[in-house]
Length: 289
Image 1 (cartoon, rainbow, N blue to C red):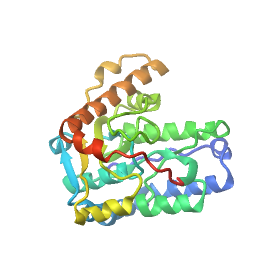
Image 2 (cartoon, one colour):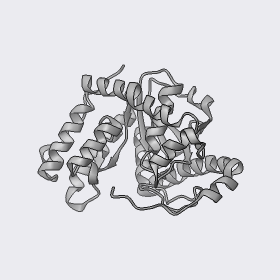
Image 3 (tube, one colour):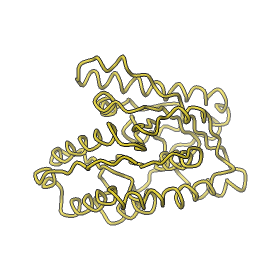
C-alpha cells in the first residue's frame, strides 16, 4: 500500500493548543502513521467491523452495493453523508469492510472538542474508532493556526494515498430534526477539500440509527427492531467545478451540489420507508458529547 510522509504541524501551530490537546494530538497523529496505522486498521476490520456486523446483521439493509465496485482503490475516496448520529460513519465503514476486499486506511475528521480535550474523549476515540477520529478541528479563534494545519493535513490525505477512505459530514454537525429527510446547510469546507484535493467522491444516505438509545437498537437486532438503511450513491463527476476559481463561493457551490446528491438518495429512501419513518420519528435526546 502506498504511504506518504505525514505533514507535521509547526511549533507555532502546535503552540495554539493547550498542553493536554497538544499531547492528545501527538498521540493520535502517531497512531495514524506507519505500522501503528496498519495495526489499528487490522483492529478496525477484525474487531470493530465484526462487532458492528454482529449487532446489526438482522437490521441492516444496503442499497447501491454495485457502486462500491466502481471505487478505484489506488486513489483516495471521500465519503460524504448526512449526519444523524455519532455512529453514522462507524456503520458505513463496517459495511465497507464487509463488502469490499481492497486494503483501506480510514480517517474521520472530527471536532477537537471532547475527543481531544479530555481523557474520556481519547478513550472513545480508541475504543470506537481505533484512533481514526483524525485530524481534529477546534473551530476556536485562538486555535485558528492549528485548524489551518488540520486543513492542510486533510488535503494531503484526500489528494493521494492508496486505500485512503475519508468520512465527512457536509452538514458539519448532527441534525437533530426528527424528520430524517431534512438537512442542515452544507458547509463550504467540504467544497474546498474536493476542489483542491480532487478525491473520488461518493454520496451516502444513512437512516434508522438510534441517536437516543443505542442499547435498544442493538437489542432490536434480535427482537425485530426497525431497519438501518445505507444508500451508497454513484461516484460523482465533479469535473465541471474544477475550472472554477478557488473562492468561498465556489466551495459553497460544490458543497451544495454534494449535499443535493445525498438528499437525492434520501428521496429514494423516503419512497420506500416514509410511512415507517414518520411513525417512528421522535425528537432526539441530548447527550453529553
